[in-house]
Image (cartoon, rainbow, N blue to C red; front, side, top):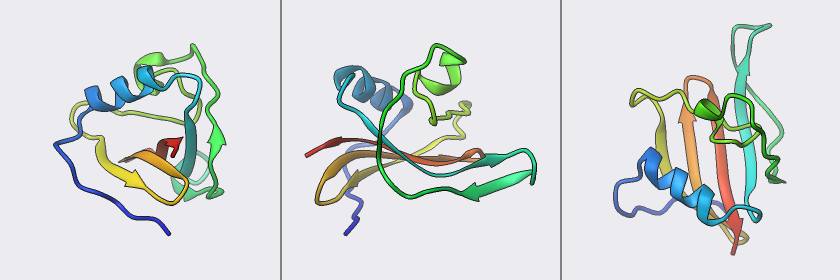
Length: 103
């Protein structure tokens, strides 16, 4: 059962700090992502995977494969919590993903 919780305003800095504090124990669930073949956002598998770190396009991925931040106030953030994980939902024109740690 998924729920979202409300807390203080969540910003890009909040997400960046969460990633840094939880390095090595992060999970990602990519719900949807941009597909250039169809020129649109498509749903993907809906399960958590351990984060795979990357050094490519760190400005837009914060070093996480599957994450994509567009910047310029076009990313939207929500707190996330379910029975097993807690973290943040990030959504923008490139898709939606969750970054979380195990409870």
